Length: 184
Image 1 (tube, rainbow, N blue to C red):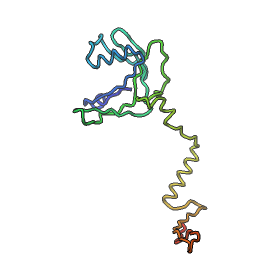
Image 2: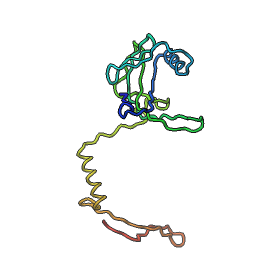
Image 3: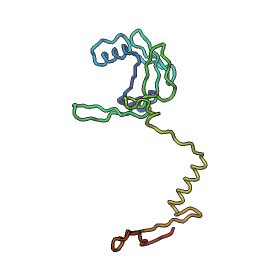
Image 4: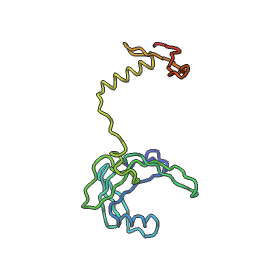
């Protein structure tokens, strides 16, 4: 799942990983390590048993990890001068690190996005597509192509009517008056 551009092209590329850690003590330890406030407790590794399941190793402790797709792609921005932002790359997956006794997340897509507003995003923000038969979709597509290329489908006529509003005389109610009428 983490095939990098460098592995495809041989050129160095920036990589970003979204790591969501369930254990609060481990999360704090990783934050301190990334801020150089603490020495590394040995090795920090992510080993995969399959495409989506693996083990996160931090020192002498290991935790089960799963890769899941995010409900939407998230942009990563950075700043070189603390004033201007530059888009770095897009992240579409998250590595979920959990405790040994915790249940593995459902396969497929992660339930939550990155920010609190994207909690349970697929259910709250994205509507389900209606069930439609492929024959109906194909028929409607064909009719739309015919309308665009040749005008109205068989048995139908389109009328283009141009009207203008005419004010009534002496306080009478106004009405619409047909100016031109074209049939297609």
